[in-house]
Image 1 (tube, one colour):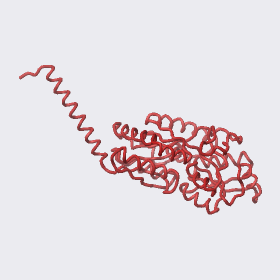
Image 2: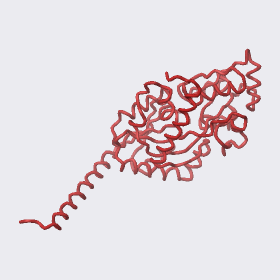
Image 3: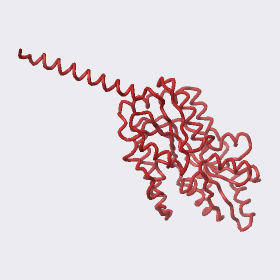
Image 4: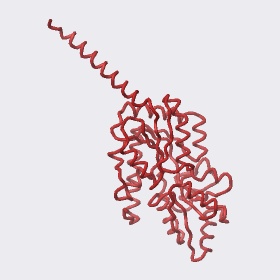
Length: 328
């Protein structure tokens, strides 16, 4: 029997619906297991704390277990390489900040990943600023007092801890030294947690890292944040001046925290996870906790995060080139 055109269209429509339902079912099945949220730094640091706050709430939104998996080392490079080789099924994601995604590819010749080809943005969480903090064993309470103290030390030399080599904090250490005419050397750590441990033990007198890395110990009086980056003072630190106020301009473009997935992850999976993140960061308790850590909560869609990452990378490509730094 010859079928009419309307019968053929109806059959085609049913086939399309069946294939669509099959695909969605496959995606749901792929995401039915545990979702790993990779973190490229050790437990105890700011990035790890943020990841654990999000994971705890995302499990309710997604209806599945979300665990934090720390793959620390090389400024997030190891975790990024793990993400690159992970299946693109939505079960492995990466929470990170600007250093791994935007800065590492500019300062390392062969980082083992290319963000533009190996990753896709999922959602932005917040923006933040880096800060200079001094240890409890340092008498300084302000930036000027810190500079005066360094000058009083043998030869006007000082060591400043940074969470990773060839990072924004390292470039900032160099510029602070140049501005004030003091010999500051960046001491690179494997993450902010071991750096903070040495600051608390007065093994190193100062450090540059993100506000979330310092904020709790600053509030406890164990370290003192004396200056912050960004175009305005931070809500969590209203009495701390910006570097621009102190005469060191050019660092107003603030970094970001975002979640990324392996390239090839289906858009339906990206959209589902991004929507869950939007709901989580809008929760009053989550917003309050992230703000108290010194973050500016700023949800970004996948497209917005991608645009933000590209613009930030371009800004720092110019700064790094002007500094004369050669990729290692």
